[in-house]
Length: 491
Image (cartoon, rainbow, N blue to C red; front, side, top):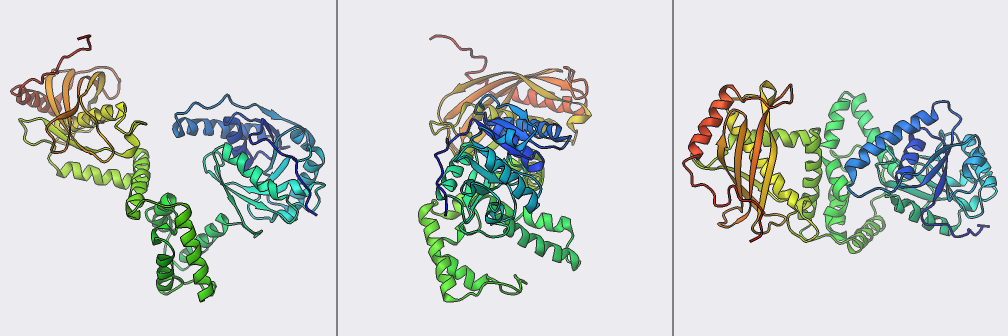
């Protein structure tokens, strides 16, 4: 008979961790940075050192992940026994090696020492919870909560109940994990390996066959995954682009398990009953989580966001995007003509929009920065690299907001050199919607040339100096902008 659990707090003040290895250390970091105290039991001599290293990595990642102020960190307490780790806590998380006997022993000990109703969750990546419950006094409190490495970053946690798990345990666990920034996914039936690992294993199996048969290298396989469908699946999943049940049926009938795309020998029977089930689920998915029409716009927006993020790291698909953009800049003229302002074109992404629906102030600073980059590329037209001499640092910026910009607006920034000498560069930027007459904003900047090695102000030299002074001479013949040199004052 399934026992009844007492209500548990949605957000535990304290958790007990059994095991501080790769997964346990990740759990410690996620809980501690969410303000939850952690009581850790791990007899390994280097457990504390390892957890502290993982925690330091998580702090670094979270500073980049969110600008929202995190709560005061929870405390890490190392204890000498399972009983000390689990006594008085709101949740127990077991993360010891994948040995059934070891897990059964520790989970049974935890069950004897926890208060009634305390959730006990195993991080096992494949063992069925009914096996883990076998020696527990209170099996109704046990369920699987399977995370992914690194636990403090990846949000998925698979929840799986055993034969004797109390029905309310899944709901209570989901609330806790959701509160610490995770996405709980309930596995509907006990199954070895759960969901995500089975999918991952299927891909790994095919990849290793390709390597075994000398059809691809490991590098080929990684590139095939991360430069193609992995991006789509990260953004929108595997099935949404079919557009509901009708599209799913057509896709399966045309492509599923057919040569030359599939070499799988074991596959489900593609009979009418199975197709009907898939169609029903595809329609339910579309109704429960409707996407804007056309779906391709949402897909493309998600891909743009992912590629922009990876471009900022200069790696993988992001490096490919950056290299393409560099080539575009090299081929495209940066100015309408040498005697006129230099032109920079940008489209405003949705991530640059504030809560009021228009471009945030940082957007205008970024547009000024991009336009300054255009000036830098212009004066380095002969191929000089920054490392060969120096670069310009902004020391002062003045913005005037004259209109509004919104997501999707294509913005032209026209940049005029107001003055230049051996060290200083005075720029004025006018920001307009492409083809528009009225400025949305103007920005005025003073920059100082800095030596690349000493990081101190230094005169610009060589061909860069000649190009800069020639550009300043040409721009001196342009009308001086009305707002140049303006200061803030009460009118």
